[in-house]
Amino acid sequence: MSKKERQLEEECEQLRSELHAMEELVQRYQDELAAAKGTTCFCHNRRNVPDLHRVEEELFENQNLAPRGSSMRLSRAELPVLCRANGEEARFSEVQLPLNWEWVSDWHRDIHAHTDESGWVYAESWEQLRDGYQLHLSRR
Picture 1: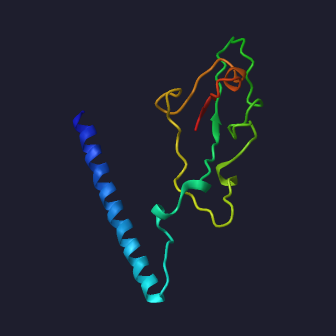
Picture 2 (picture 1 turned 30 degrees about the vertical axis):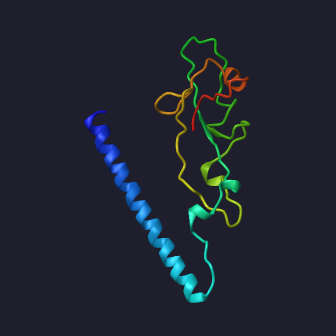
């Protein structure tokens, strides 16, 4: 492990510790409020809420490159710059949560075994990406 990786790991551990302390403080505050009201309070405690209703929203950023003289038939009209998995055009600002739902994280790139380090997947055609491989020329 490099020096930078050790430093990042130490910083992450410090942040985890601070988060745990804050969660404990919030829980203690809620318990005190509940005791003052004579009720039990389970709000804002992530440990008491199962992930039964968690939904993942995905938007895909599409780009294409048709080198000069290429026989590839890719056009910007085939897929919008941002779209859902079904190819329907979308914008981040258009994704609305149902009433009383909340975001659990900000938008982020989905980096996995089929992407490069920036989250991009590459193919020779849109069809190659849409057919069976479940891959997209996109950054998620």
